[in-house]
Length: 95
Image 1 (cartoon, rainbow, N blue to C red):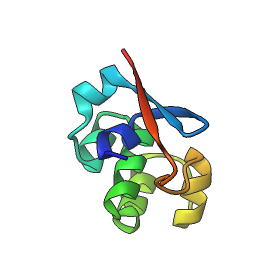
Image 2: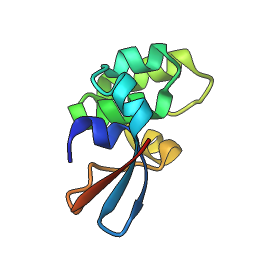
Image 3: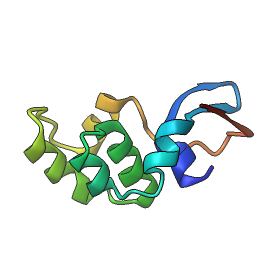
């Protein structure tokens, strides 16, 4: 799964990822920090997860929001995203 697809996936149907094409086109190459500055917290979290930077994302996230998470596992539960899926066979982009 490509980075931009993962960041802007809005759901899954079996082995298919459903992607917000408008957001991906506009912000697909943005860093986690840039996405957070835009207020796109879930996308920023997904970018940090994909890039392997959750440990540096956590303190920035807690400083910017009033959400009191203390570890990465809690942060994963907040966003309902736990890993980059390797079972995605197809991507459907909604425009």
